[in-house]
Every structure is written in C-alpha cells, then in structure tokens.
Image 1 (cartoon, rainbow, N blue to C red):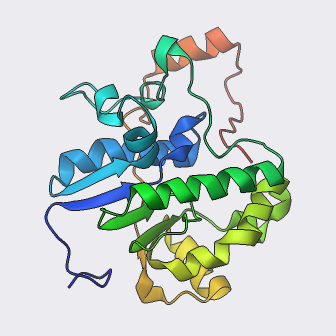
Image 2 (cartoon, rainbow, N blue to C red; image 1 turned 60 degrees about the vertical axis):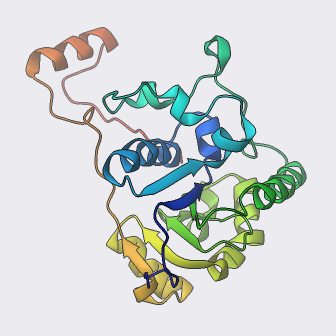
Length: 234
C-alpha cells in the first residue's frame, strides 16, 4: 500500500494538468516542463501524460522533445505551435472572472471525461480540477491567500471559489519548501504527515559564469558592476 492510500500498479499512469505550458513560462510552467523531462528519465515505471498535450492537441509533448536530448534551457522548454508562434492559452491569462469561470467549468468536464483510465492525478499548480482520481497537489506557496493584493483579482477569486475544495480532494501534497509546509499546517490545518517537501533543483543554466562572460553580458546590456535583478512575476 502506497502513502497515497492504494496499491500502485506498474507502470503507474499519471495525468498532469499542464495548462501553464500553454502560456509564457513562469515558475509553475518551468516546474511542469522539467518534471516531464526528468521523470521519464529517472522514473521509467511511472508514465506521466500532460493532459492538454496528450488529449487536446495534435502533437504530443513527447513528439516535441527530440529523443536522447539533453535537458533543455528555459527557451527550449517553451512549447511552440506550428510556425514558431506560442500556442494560445487554455483556461488562464488575464480574462474577466466570469469568462475564466466558464472556461474552468468546460475544461473540468473534458478533463474528467478523458482521464477516467488513469491511476493518479498530479496537480502542479495549487488548485486541482475536480476529479475522482486520487489527487496529489503541489503547493509552491500561499501568497494568494496571505498577500492577495499581490495578485490579479481573477486569480484571487479563483482561489476563493476552488482552493478549499482542492484541499479536501487532495490525498497528499508536495510542498516546495519547509516554510510552505509549515504555513499549510498552521494556516490551512493540513496534517503534516500528508505533506512531502520536495525541493526544486536548478537547471544547468543556473551556474556561476566566468568573468569574461559576465563582462560581455554587462557590456551588451549596459549594466554597471553592481545591479539588482528581479525575475519574478508578482
């Protein structure tokens, strides 16, 4: 019996909600891309299917990744549609709340219809789609709940309408840090034994560079020797 509460078949068929791959990659999108790349390499007894790329597009995620390719950089992991254009967003973006809610409802209906044959559902972005599958949800942080003023209004309303139901649906959680786990226990009342802390490692891109490379970039961007770089989206 696994920690999720059922005997796991081999191979384990996991459906992954991959909607963040369909827009400009931020933290969650990169997290999903790297999961898809590396789980296939290091967990061959687990088959993870990204939902949108498996069931709603003509070309699968695996078809977009060359065999035996090295783990790509951030630019390489961004899925491109035919002609090199970034594919349209599915169910996200800055839409009016009523439109987002309608899209979420329609997406959920298709999701439940298409995923009945899977063993496990992994939601990598805080709020799972309503599903009868055993669900594991990744919680990166609780900033929408703790600092709603940092986030767009439609995202705050989405959390207000669906986050608590997602907590009840999830059998286990993946927390990005011990701090996030502690907040989940203290603020949400989640039992600590239901939370696994899994740190997110850096890609090969994120490594110290030699002085010559640093000088070249500073010169190209006309940067002083000391500067402040902000890479977040909030």
